[in-house]
Length: 229
Image (cartoon, rainbow, N blue to C red):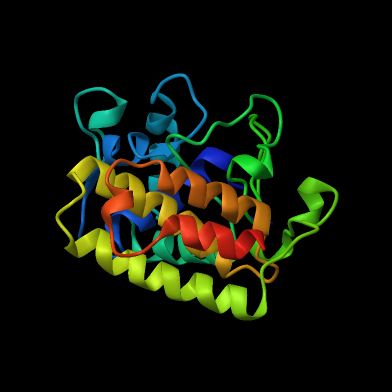
């Protein structure tokens, strides 16, 4: 019988892989994840149960630590990183903190829902990430996709932006972390079989609103214009 995981457990794994950047020796505090991503929960108390369950399955290194939920340690095992990578490669989405998520409903693709995301609720499970397709939750594919020269231009933009965000000193640490999170979502969308133009354009607009982005060598506005043609 296949193991089943809740939406929050899956999101915790993918978020941990993103933040630790594949370094399995890196032990994170849960606040490093809850402060960066929107898990659609009123508090961080869900971390206790999710971390305990994933630790029992060998996907996280089991820790017991005094303090509140955000103080708990999160560290991926090799098995946990493998599962997180499979989810990420199947376009399982984690949402940046500033992206709004609706309750008791699927997020609106215009607000950053790229690939697929599972609705909120205790019954949210996924048995096999390769078996889930975006059509199963949207009911229809995105009617506008990015391809050809536009897609190549977007990939070039992503590569240059990644370098600038990490090396140029015009962004504060907070704004840099915010920009990197949005850029990661754009990258996932660009790597999808049918890159959704509307969602990518909306994420680029969110990126452009971050303080200091306008002073970089890359032009987010120009990239938005290319996609909008």
